[in-house]
Every structure is written in structure tokens, then in C-alpha cells.
Image (cartoon, rainbow, N blue to C red; front, side, top):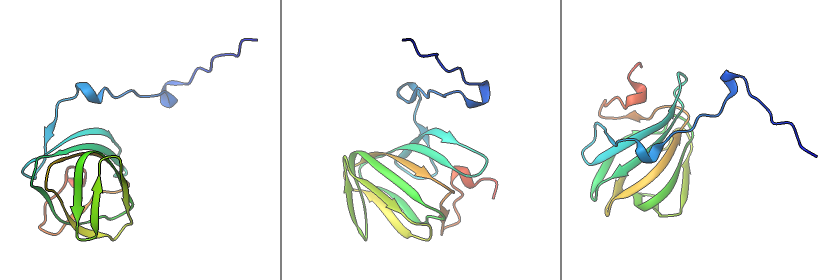
Length: 128
């Protein structure tokens, strides 16, 4: 028996992001590039990051839940190390400096933009 194929209206359709064909974009931080896979007007975003060996994300606060899945390399802070195949999440209010001693590629999901203590406005916080 054939099941009917659902047809979503345009506002409910799936969106395929060809991340493998997207160019890496520079960030405000030396040695860190990104591909924005998703972002909305409420500050949510999903971003693929690539950090060169030795690159550092300076002191910042996660203003809401942040989730990261490591694809390659490692991301380290004062609380530990997250390597390839690992997942780490941080609650809103978490403060840290992250670095990639040997480089890293990872996907991060943000509910709201980070707040940087040096005043840097990360791309999603530009309107704040």
C-alpha cells in the first residue's frame, strides 16, 4: 500500500545547506574561520568553526546554552579538553578562554550570542 507523500507549505520546507561548498569566512579572531549554517533574528545560530593550531577564543561568556560537537583536533580550557568525536555543552553564564593547541574543527550551536570581555562584538551580536 502506497503512503501519500506529504507536501509542506513553503514556510515549513526543509533547507539544505551545502556546507562542503561554502567558503570559510574570517572572524574577528586570528586563526579562526567559520561557516554560518543557520542564524535567526532571535540570536540562535549553528556555526562550523575551524581554528588554526594555537588559535585562541578570548575570554567570553556564554549568555545561554551553547553546544559543541568536535569533528577534528581539540578545544581546551581551564575545565578540560574536548577532542574529535566528543561533545561539550556549556550553560548560560559559563565563562572561559578556549584554545586549540593543535587546531580544531567543530560545530557549535548557540541560543544567544557570546559576550566578549574585551568588547568584541561577535557577528551575531552586531545589533546589540
